[in-house]
Amino acid sequence: MSVFRRIRQFIQAVTARVTVDDGKYISAHLNAEEQKIFFAMSVADQAHSLRTAYKIERLVIEDKRGVDREFLIRCALLHDTGRRNGDLTIMGKVFVVLITTLAPGFADRMEINGNRALYVYHHHAELGAQKLQRIGLFKEAKIIAKHHAPPKPDDPLELKLLRLADNEN
Image 1 (cartoon, helix red, strand yellow):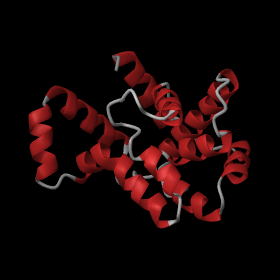
Image 2: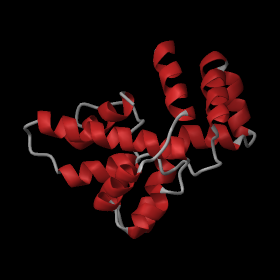
Image 3: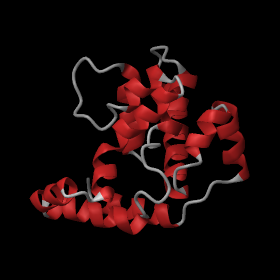
Image 4: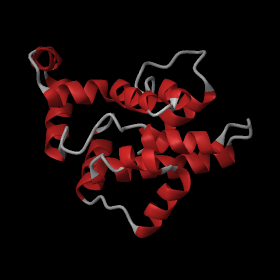
């Protein structure tokens, strides 16, 4: 990932907000239990998830292969729910990205020794999938658990679209 993309992500995170219109969008696509999980994320992660969902909307319009739009929007809104508010602050994420990039072996040792921020950063897809399974969203959990896994040729289209939208935001 380029330095400029990381800088853009940082600026988006520190200026993040969820508007009234965003709240209406969330209410239109997530039920009360799903919203509870969504709003447990930091505002920066909520705003990122919203941008991902809006990008999914555009991708679904462009893609004529008949994917389930509502399913993908729900996946986009919930894809980072493995990171709860407080698990990984903005500066914590900056630290994690830098240490993982510049000293991966050291980062691995820190994670093994219990560094929560590194653990959440590396495993939030699986953590989020577990939360979704507990509320019965098994299909969504299956996609979300793999959204940071290396792509495979037989990945479902929904997973490919989620990755694309997530990577652009």
